[in-house]
Length: 136
Image (cartoon, rainbow, N blue to C red):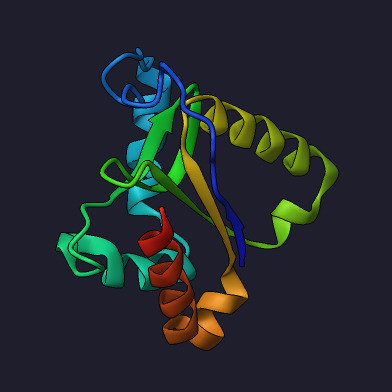
């Protein structure tokens, strides 16, 4: 699990949703991803949805700067990415780096969790995530 705490303020920090335009293709893609979540994403979503986790509101498959983030909490300015094996490939690493840069430029914090961490120890993941959320 990787935690990236953003210590910089940004004039864009409150506008992840409200100050951007999303094209129809991205909206369609986000809807499709909501319907076809990975098993790890589904498991994590069971714990995040409906303010079950730290009474925070999370959205899934949130469009941001042309990218689609797995989970997003506006209250904490927190992006959660659930990473499978594809994230170890060079092309995907480049995409992930651009996504992280866009998120950091908006003043967001980032948590990257590997699928296997969720599948094998969801309780440990949630505990670490809770500790991080309390710090930000």
